[in-house]
Image 1 (cartoon, rainbow, N blue to C red):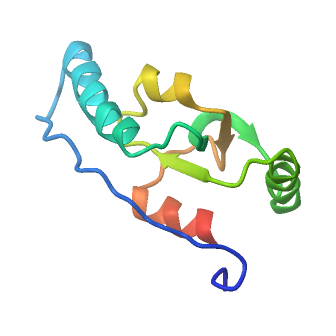
Image 2: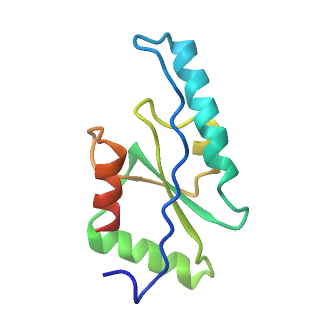
Length: 118
């Protein structure tokens, strides 16, 4: 349905191999490695919207209004970042221009992608 309105590229980065029952330090190392791969895919001029539990919850209309407002300000290259099960590294969060939340719950990447595109 979005085809006539915009171009969508879905880019995935490889999940970092992670052992079960990781320590906090190991979790941070996994997030850092995944974060480096994510940031390597983002252009300097891109507007980055991270999906975060702590992000702002919007209605469909509210999200459309937010994107519309940014487009009128000349922003047209939007990158939506869906983090891994341990969340996003602080460097990715710092690169974010807007934090968006769909729920206080955690969902698999694939499900969030479908919800976001829909």
